[in-house]
Image 1 (cartoon, rainbow, N blue to C red):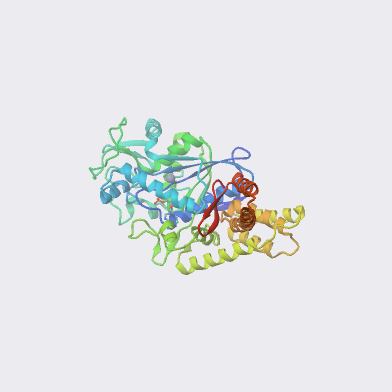
Image 2: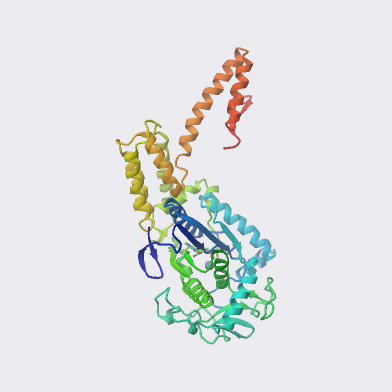
Length: 464
Ligand code: AMP
Ligand code: ZN
């Protein structure tokens, strides 16, 4: 598989450290509000990568954090914790806020068929690991204490800006006009590993540490969780492009200083989803979520389809026109698939050819739009029989996850079930209750329960 690596600024052949196995970390959501559809676009990008790796036969172990402490309202080290802002807004404890928005996040995450990562770790559950890392960073001279906080000294690492390739002054957080400089720091770019003092006295979440009661910085959370659960060598680490600096830049500095060697080989970043006013964000007013789209009558998978039609490294504009179009196209695609008759034997030659073409597209830096074109070509190809087509669609859908043959299965079963219901009604009319019962039981064994209503007999699936 070819994958763009932010670290080398090149498309590279992907090679995991251990053959056949992939250790993959995704930066999780900050659970102080609903996840907007921009955040979800990012997780769809990660989901495509996760599913593609599995399609190609890799055994993937993927971890993701839940940021429930330490993510401040701006990039500097003196903003207010986002969780605290939410806590005041909603008059709830930080943990209640985290609980509520974590659940809401995963609802939307699953509505767009994102696969759950193998490990999901709330940041507040791993304090010991951050303390262990910070202790070592202090011992080894990479970190220092000032004004009650512990900071990482960026001048102690060789190539702090390796991920961004930018000139220092453009990026240094304290150098921007909208950000106040933190007087405690030796260098403007230094970042906090542990806070015991902040100008916001009401910080609710605090833990004992060798440096006083306090709380971790956001960056150390992802490094700590990743190293603890995925080990010292990571294959892929990713997030949205806004995570490149300062978050991932700081993660590399502290992780490699702690480990004493290179940490992660591939850095994977998704471009943003914008609305007409610019980048979507949680902090600017009404939040457009997948659930809101669903309430408006949209199929969440139409949003996924819209995302898949563009490349993850291109910005994408959200408009209702685009979403409507995606929904119509997906409907047509699914009904086209539903009309394919399951005829003929599996044709190995065509199967291989189309499977290879799909793999070629998706392995080309996750070119989902080209993979969708391969699907259309397959559907049009009169040389390929129905059975082979359906097998391939089913297989492609392991990556697309658009429930492409759900309708086919439903409508096909539906006809069969309706025929049996009619047969049973006929049997009852003829007082052949044994036959009627055996039909009911036969269906029940397949997880289909018959419901005799005043309007006639219907059914429901009880364990599909
Ligand atoms: P947050 O909950 O703010 O920590 O963000 C969760 C993830 O969503 C991060 O990895 C961000 O990079 C990503 N993200 C934030 N805004 C957008 C956006 N408008 N489009 C795509 N991804 C985004
Ligand atoms: Zn992170």
